[in-house]
Each structure stands twice: as C-alpha cells, then as structure tokens.
Length: 332
Ligand SMILES: CC(C)(COP(=O)(O)OP(=O)(O)OC[C@H]1O[C@@H](n2cnc3c(N)ncnc32)[C@H](O)[C@@H]1OP(=O)(O)O)[C@@H](O)C(=O)NCCC(=O)NCCS
Image 1 (cartoon, protein in one colour):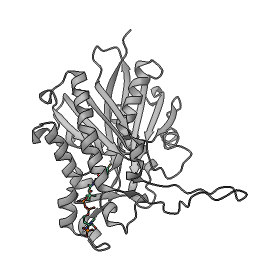
Image 2 (tube, protein in one colour; image 1 turned 135 degrees about the horizontal axis):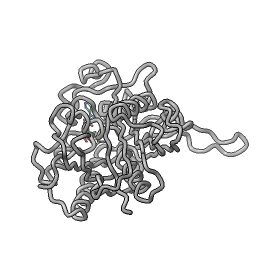
Image 3 (cartoon, protein in one colour; image 1 turned 45 degrees about the vertical axis):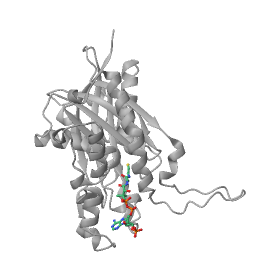
Image 4 (tube, helix red, strand yellow; image 1 turned 60 degrees about the vertical axis):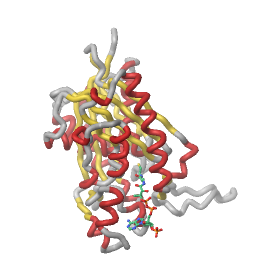
C-alpha cells in the first residue's frame, strides 16, 4: 500500500503587543524610513508578560485542532520547531502535548532556526511514508525578541514573535500533498547568525570560553549573500525534480525575513508579483513561524485562493535552508 501525506490544515497565534518603527526610534538611533526601505518592516509583535514560545505554540496548536475538529488522541507525534526556547528542557513539544492533552503523542523539538518549519515538514513526511507515525502536529514557534539586544539597531528592528501549527496525516489518496521537498545545511557559515547559551564548566577544571553575550549576533550582509547564492539553485532543483515550472505555482510564500530578499527571490523565479505572499510589513521576521502565519492570514484575507499549489522557502541560522511545493486543498 502506498502511503502519502495529507495536509489537514494550519493556524497561528502571534504575540499581543505591537511595536512600530516609530516606537523603536524613541529608544534607538533609527527611523521608520531606514527600517522600511531596508527591510519592508513597519511593525512587529513582541511577547510580554506571561507570553513565551510555549504559550504561543499551545494557542496555535489549540486553534488548528479546533478548526479541523481533529481528534487529539490520534496525534502520535508532535514536532516543535523552536530554536530559542525559554527552557532547554522540558521541551516545548512536551509542554504542548500536556497542554492539549495529546496523551498518545511522542514529542521532540527540532532546531533549524527560520527553516525549522520546512525541516519539520520534511521529517513528518519521512515518518508518515515509512509508516512510523500517522498523525503529526508540527508547531513552529519562536520568540526571538527575548534574545535580541535592544541596543543593537542592526538586528533588533528585524524580529517579531509568533507561532504556527500544521496537522499532517497519513492517507491512501493517490497524490501526496507534499509534492516535493528539499533541504540544505552549511555549518561552515555558522557564525553568520549566533545565539549563545549560558553554562559553566565544573570548578575543578579549566573554564571554557566566556559565553556571557547571550544575544543574537548577525552578519547581515553575509546572510543576504548566502540566501541569494544557495537558495535559488535549490529551488530550481526542487522544481525540476517535481517537473514543475513557475507557471505551475499558484503562490510563493518565502520566509518573511526582508522584503528586498522576498522580491529578489521572486524575481529569480520569474514569478508574477500577484503570486508572491508577503506580510512582513506587519510582523517582521517571526523565524520558523513566518510561513505558516503568512499562509493562514492570506487564506483568511482571500489573497490565497484554494485549492492551490504553493512554493515555500526558508533559510536561517546554521546556516540552514529548505524548500517545498505543497498542495493545499479547498478545506484548508
Ligand atoms: C540587516 C540588513 C537590513 C542591513 O542592511 P545593510 O544594507 O546590509 O546595512 P549595513 O549593515 O551595511 O548598514 C548600513 C548602515 O546603516 C546603519 N544601520 C544599521 N541598522 C540601522 C538601523 N536600524 N537604523 C539606522 N541605521 C542603521 C549601519 O550602522 C550602517 O551605518 P554606517 O554605514 O555608518 O556604518 C541587511 O543586511 C539584511 O537584511 N540582511 C539579511 C538579514 C536577515 O534577514 N537575517 C535573518 C535571516 S533568517
């Protein structure tokens, strides 16, 4: 029997507080004009109070389960794509499992930074095709603003906080909803985006390197160049393997990192502007969550019309990258 992957659906949750570029210019030497022209971002959501990656992830998971009236006891795996959780353990996925009462699910977190959602989708597809798990909840949640140096104007203006959730199941239907998927990693570029953790050696041995700077540090220009050189050929490979051309793609939803990058990638693909989905203006870079938030929001707004074949593409710290062509049916 041929087992395929069915995308049941998706939903999201974002942090409550909205911070505009003008708000930032009150605490930093920056301006709405600089941020908007260099990045396309106008405002972003930032966590406050009791909000964390886990609480946003739980809300996104609850919403997707409710939207599709999904039997939570059928979920046998939860993958949380969360690269900077508030606690190293327990894992975000275990906390989500407990909150939604998915008592039959095993759980693990996956760290591939902004590419975490597509890496998780790739993993979910492999588990489904091999028959190991049948109903998988992916929760992509990141609250990068908690790990941002709010005095570093070159990074703090870029990020926002949110979570997305997707349910995928095994099906005997002829077509796989994940039409094609690929990924890449290049650890030799690991220093392009870094976030250190705390930790100290045993007092009886030599101290290790000082990790006291626990904020995100980024070489913005190197990241930009990495994306523009490594991602387009990988998308071309994906399209070729699926026997797809740009005409077969209804929408392109890239990771929402920077409007200039979104436009440059779309141009390389020779995609009409009307097919390119961008909501970065309202949210900034929400890391692993960005693609799921953008897809759900644009379905809700009527820009994405279903059924649709959607090309998704993401890249981030590691450096990592991943792309997929997915099929969303009219019930998504
Ligand atoms: C971050 C990014 C927008 C910066 O744009 P850039 O054109 O490379 O800008 P630079 O870093 O060269 O800085 C240009 C100048 O603007 C200044 N600047 C940086 N941030 C600023 C801000 N928020 N407001 C005002 N000025 C700023 C710099 O200090 C620099 O000034 P100088 O020339 O006097 O030294 C761009 O590199 C980028 O988007 N890179 C990709 C980052 C990304 O998406 N990362 C996540 C991937 S998942």
